Length: 225
Image 1 (cartoon, rainbow, N blue to C red):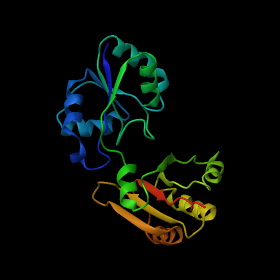
Image 2: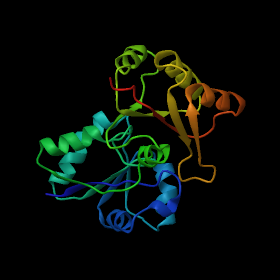
Image 3: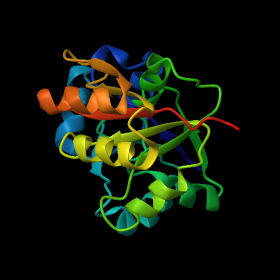
Image 4: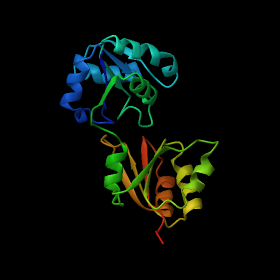
C-alpha cells in the first residue's frame, strides 16, 4: 500500500518551501493540486516534473475514491493546495478522511500556513486560541458571530480583501469598537503588512487605504470575569 503525503507550499515567498517538501514531490507517483496552473509555477521553479492531477472543492467528491484506490494499489501521492497547508481552509479533508478510513498511511509535512505568523506577530496571547477560518459569507454568519461573543481566547479569521471592511465593521458592532485587533495581509510577500490597534482605528486605516491581498484577522478575546 502506498502513502498520501500532505505537503504545505509557500503562502508567498518561494523560499519558504522546505527541502523535505521538494524531495517528496519529486519522489511521489503523482501530485494532487488545487489549481494545476498555479502549482505548475511552483513545480517548475523547483524542477519537479511528476504527473499532476486536478483536485479541488468542485471535483473532490468525485475523485476521492479513485485516488484512494490508486494509493491502496501501491502508488504514493502528494496533496498540495495553491498556498499553505492543504485542508486548512482548502480542499484536502475529504481525501485525508477517506485514506484514514481505508487504513492508508497519511503523513502531513510541517510547513507554511498563513495564520501562524499572523497570530505570533499580533502580540496577542497565543498559548490558547481558536481558528475560525472564513466566516460564512451570508447564511449563518451572524449566528457564528453571536456565538463568539463570550470567547475568551484569541480568535483568528481568514478574509478576502472584498469583505475585510465589512467583517471589521461587524466585529465592532458585535464586540465593541475598543476591542483590539491585528490585521495581516500578504504574509511573506513583497507588500506584507500588519496593522494593529482597536477595531475603530483599524477600520479607519482600511477605509483610507484600499484593502488588497489575502488577509488574516487576529481578534482579542473578551475579558475573563
